[in-house]
Length: 200
Image (tube, rainbow, N blue to C red; front, side):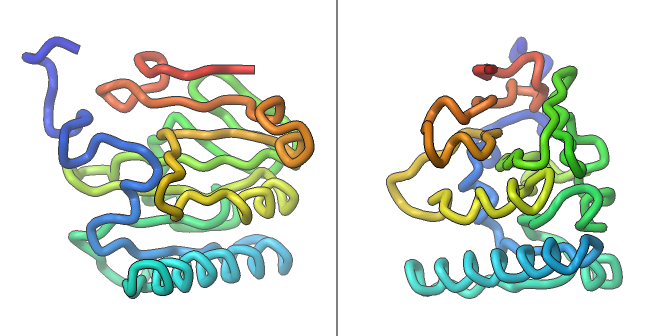
């Protein structure tokens, strides 16, 4: 991008990306309740685990709410982290409807590319709509297998950098990097096509 074309909605020092940046700005964790019983239980347990880990490591308190609470209450001056996908977390449509990354049951779409399978795990960060400061982090999967693959990813641990986006499947647990389907950074305008990604 030319300097003249950069706006507050683009990447800038206060909101430049990487998954960990979503933990800033009085972050609120939102877990989904629209999935099946196993998906809902995972979302709640994962959000609670991450909040307790943050409390233990950094002596910080993070508010945890359901997607239904998010719809009923008004939030400002907050980042968010969503647990679930577009079908299991109703806050997705409000926060990520314009995202080039969409996760549903059995499928992940990143720009023009589509990946299929029930064992896909996706971690990413996006700018919050209508804001030039706040962000939305996502801990997601295309099914319960993919969701549980995120359980051991150390995105809250110091010394473990994560890019803007990481997509991987169940092969990651046994074959390491061979299970990574995509990883990289969105462009300065937060687009996929202007970004830097590796694809499998």
